[in-house]
Length: 111
Image 1 (tube, rainbow, N blue to C red):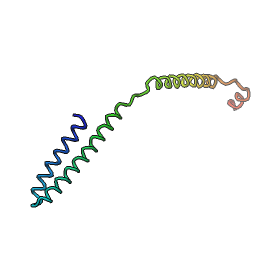
Image 2: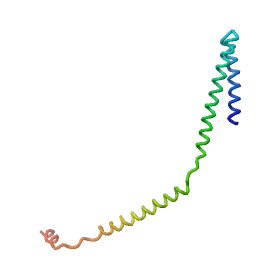
Image 3: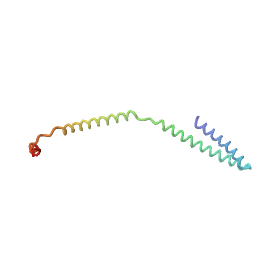
Image 4: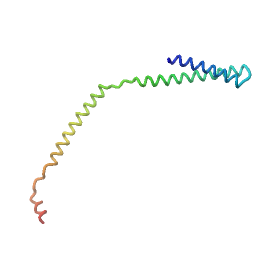
């Protein structure tokens, strides 16, 4: 349903609700017109609020995600991570080398 049609439909509903409420609540013509006008305006304004929120959610869902840019950035991050992993692996290999035998260590171990 178009937003315009929803506003018309809801305004007409407000008009009839206002007439019914005016007949039930007041016993003169002035009260009937007042209640009818108040209810019609409330339903009219409320329908515009509903339509505005509806269109806001529709347009928010139409946001396009920049997939190409995002993928390029992720590829760049992946390359950086791989470089850093190579550096860390080479540092670990250097640290994993067996220590050189120190003659002083052997003397301390025997005593």
